Structure formats: structure tokens, C-alpha cells
Image 1 (tube, rainbow, N blue to C red):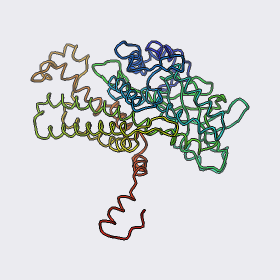
Image 2 (cartoon, rainbow, N blue to C red):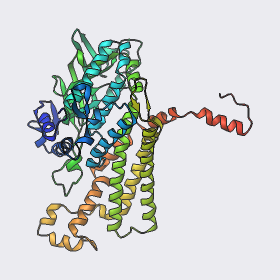
Image 3 (cartoon, helix red, strand yellow):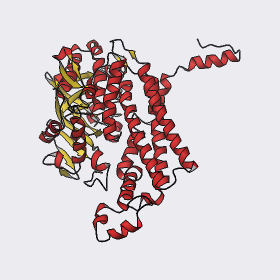
Image 4 (cartoon, rainbow, N blue to C red):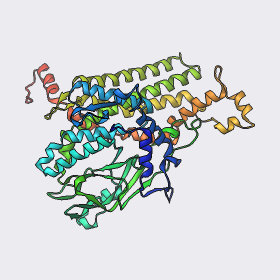
Length: 486
């Protein structure tokens, strides 16, 4: 089968010889044994194993008859019907429930992103037929080998600032520095490449690029393996830990973010999707309906994460003996309401899905845009609920080693709950700490806040989908005011 299992995923990552730096030192040896990466690799290996389990095989994969009856991962499926969209969603639910919505870049996210670009690849014929063929071939390559893909598009502040120089040679922004018959040479840096080190390849497309009349050296898109000569990965500090008792989330789901530097990296011609034409990139994202397809995956993750927080907050309320207080009931009702809202928005997106010009079914844009508009602030609201319910118990939680020490007897006596052992109570509050006050939770909070762009960008996207004229016209007609809006 084309779909890989956990062992194959781990072995691929371990075989890569990438120039990876962590805490000022080059990382040597297999990543699956490194404490900053091992927990995530194990978790994703378990996810890939689900593609082979008897009970989930049919829900995680699909058979492509025109590809020799090969079986592929369902997140690569380009949907031709509403039934296909629902099949994709069921698959994404299974993975989201496995990681409880805590992996913002689980493999199905970038698989979906690549699929969306593939559905519009024919438009690249207008710019260069070779680009269209490259993108189609790359999609098929990733699908047939079950490639785990990362992406990079945000550039450091210094790079964006330097774009304003009149001399392209003086700019440190990511750009094409040489063109050759068989490819291009690129230099520049990208930040926030989530899971870059634990993926096979990386999709690179700087956005937005400075506007230029023609042949823009800052505009390009390509995908390459992580171990090309001249590529360097510099990691942020890790939240990962080995103890699942002390750090139940970061020991499993810590996604490393990295800055990726291209220092005169040669990009083969067959891996280039467009060059020099910003319009091609804009149209590829727009006509490929990137935000709709990706939004369908994202809202599924939102639902899983909300359910996890609902369960945690409910358990904390029980543990604190406040489950039936009015303020707690109001809070739980608020989460239940938003959970149903998210599920309804997803259902609306699927029900109102329509085929694009190429016959690929696209989830309705507005419901998904509404979800991405609402969720960042709602997520922070849930964290505030969690912090308030925990009170000082969010802070005073000894470690697993303390429980096992000679002082453990005191802990067992004084930190137990009315109906729980000290170990069970501490485990619950350490989970709350990781989400509500620890480094892992802080990164999650920031990640959700800017997941689909800064709040102004997200608001502008929602605003652009609204047809305000008909509502204005309704008011003018109600008041019998002459109306210029038709």
C-alpha cells in the first residue's frame, strides 16, 4: 500500500541527514531518540499506524481505481462529491481525536493544503505548462509515498523590512539569486516552519511578496526534501519532557517550530510551481479554495480540542466540588453551545458544498470563515475558565518523583481529594497546568490566536465574503429611502 505505517514514518525521519540545530548544537543521531522530538514522533507514528489497523483502515484510506487500485491516505483525496467531503472529515476526526486537536500541523493539514493547490493546477498552464505538470506530479508523488510535509512562508522581520530597499541585491528577503537551465538558486530565511524537522519535505512560498511589474525575484513556490545542501534548521526552545505524568501533553504533542535558512540552495526545475508572477500564486490559492479545504480540516481539529477542554473543565469542576454552582453551569453551557455551533458550521459547510469549475467539491466558505473568526477568542475564554476553576491548585503540584520519594507520604495525605488519591488529583491539575499556565499551553494559545493570520486579516477575509449591499438595500426599502444599491 502507498500509505505508510508508524515504523516507516519513524525510519524515514531518522534516515534524514538534515542540518538541524538545537540549543546551539548540531543535532546528531536519530531524531526519534532525541528528547525534543521523540514524543511527537511516537505520537505521529501511532497516527500513521491507524492507516493499517483493521478497524480504521477503510475510514483512513481510499482506493484510487485509475492508479492501479492503489490505496492512499484519505487526506490526499480531491473530493468529487459531498460524500467524499464527509469521508475526508471522518478520517480527519479520527486523527484529531487521537491528538485531541493539539497538533496544529498534523499530517492531514498539509496533505489537504497540497490537495487544494492540485485542484487548481491547470490554471498554471496560462503561465507555463511545465509549472502545471510539476504541481500535478508533486501531488501524485506525495500521495503515492505518503509524504509528511511541512511548509514555510513567513519571513523574519529583518527580511520583510529589507524588501523596501531599491536594490534587490542588498535585500536579505528570500529571493531567487540565480537561474539555471535545470533549476534556480534561492537564498533567504523563513520562520515558524512547524514540524519542519519531523517531516520528509517542505513546501516553500514566501507571502506576501513585494509588488513588482514583472519577473519578481521574490515570488516563487517550490517543494524540496529537508536535507538539500545549504538548508539549515534552527529550533526554538522545546517544551518537550519525558515524564507523561508530569507533562502529559508536551511529552506527546510538542510540535517543534524552526527557522529555515536557504543559503544558495539549488532547487531542481521539476520542483518549481511558479516563478516571478505573484498573480499565479494568488490565483492558485484562490481558485484552489485553500481556505475552504484547509478550514474544513481546521474546524474538525477545533471540535476535537473543544471536546477535550470540555472534558477537562468538567472533571476539574467535579474535583473542586463546584460542578453544580451557577457559575460553573453557565460556563459548561457556554462551551456546549460553542461546541454545537462549531459542529453546525461544519455541517453547513458540507451541506452547502458546491463543485468548482473543475468538478471538485468545495466546502462552503462562509461557515468555515465564521469558525476561524470565532475560535481564537473562544479558546482564550475556555483557558480563562480553566484557570479560574483551578485557582491555586493550578500551581502547587509536586512531580512524579516527589510522589515516589520519602516525602511522598505527606503528599498522599495532604493533596488528596475527597474522592480521589493525591496521584490522581495531581495528574489532573498537571494536565490543567500544561494547557492553562505552562510553556506548552502558552505556545498553543499564541498558535491559535494567529493560526489563519492576524485578527485583522481574518476579519478582512470574513468581511470580504459578506454581501452588505442587499442588507443596506433592505433598510433603505424599509425606510423608503432612495437606494443606489442594486
